Length: 306
Image 1 (cartoon, helix red, strand yellow):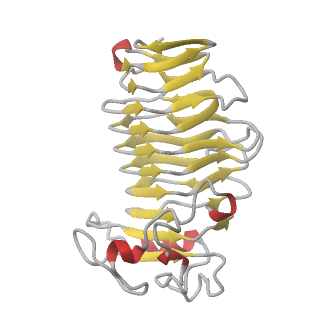
Image 2: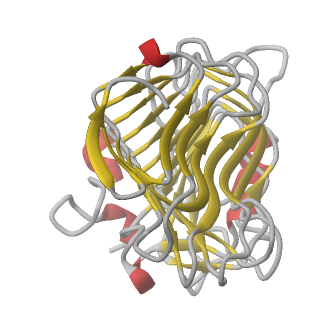
């Protein structure tokens, strides 16, 4: 049996047949049309190849993730916004790739992102694990590492994207600069993610240096040295929420600032658990609600920004 047919009792995801009821080599229907495609990547499969394989058969998958991304992107009609998304299913293994994002596409890691040798692990020798414009991208259950002084995920523009249940990791002693970096984000979600490290935490967990509007950061474990969520250089942050996150230095260091929205003050911060020298630096005290904080050793429930 192909790895992609695992049931919910054997893997993190239900079987593709159980969800859509289609054969591995067939196109299949989704809401809005019937031309979305499944691509498969498995570097350990004996028939994996990027040359003659089209990646649509789980028994003849692509060897690399980027080959599947390129195949999916090549089919986009930029004159017509896609009504359905392709899906890239990735088998567990270590992929030493510097990825560029697919557009209007789901990338799903089978296995378990925190499961060591049973996870999809994107870890290039140098540079970001993924860098480029994010547009309609859904990343699920994948571990991304950076081993050099760069962001782990370096989006630039990040619009209508979801990063869900992923591990964002500094794989070297304190070299990675930011977990997820963007210069302009709208309508995106970063949820259920673990910002982890090998020896020292990331310098910054999540950062936007431009607009960050109508976005959600929720249920994340963010371990960092300088700032957990840094919107101090952001532009518009209206409609964005950071809620139910745990933010600290990972037990290795005392985090400097948990959440920094000191310039704009548009981010709603609600029910986050933070320990840092300054848990929340916010320009609008009315936008912080019931955050459980420990400012340099003094525990409290903070209802105003500091």
